[in-house]
Length: 310
Image (tube, rainbow, N blue to C red; front, side, top):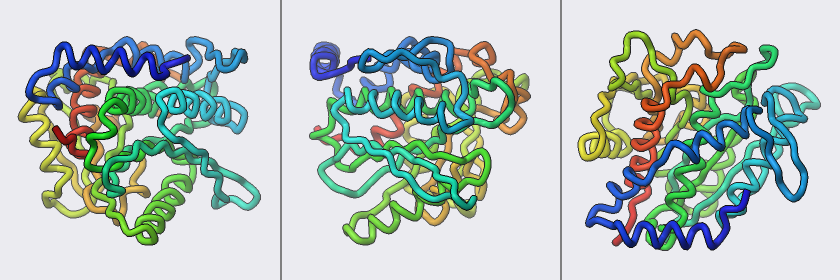
């Protein structure tokens, strides 16, 4: 995989040639399914990954060996985009066990930050590729980074792309990152403006007409900057209909708890997904047209939250 400076230059020229007066609409329209599916296939074992002459597969993400391979894939992707990325090992709740989060930082004009988070571990169910939960969200995160990297000099806020470990068992990775980022923000004097959780994003519930999403929001039933930004993004560009749930903010709740503006846009009825945490969580369970619509919304949402200057 090599996205590099040349690839970003081509992307910039393409945007310039087709640019409108609305950069967020341009980004919404720029989201394509094929790159996301390509990354989905590599991070879930369908296709091999080749990095620095080494070819390997990532069939699951439920053991140290495969998690390490996933991190190699994820880190390489962000390095190729020119976005600084680092692994963050930590001690888990289980004595002697180490977890590892990964954070890539797209620095904006201000250190005030938008956190885009997902988890990369999968359950221990035999041979579960965990496509929807949560590789689907990670692929959207990666596409978001690729599309926003050319706008780095115009971003008002910094975007922190985070994948957390051990969500499926103890939630320790989310808690560890939440503690880390609040501590760093306090020491360095910046604000965490909002947290956006990308998780299950492609399964179409039998009760969903194809136009509905669930949105989980941190805290009591009240508006925040992030819910306002999401509402505006939907009103401006998308015909998806959100249903809000307050006080339950998705799988990566521990990152968002105590951080103003935690929001998780997700497929409708994600907790009723019969393939969740099961061996059958495969590419075939996703409805790709629905997945693309959620991805388009997510990319524009993050861009608006980070605020692109003219």
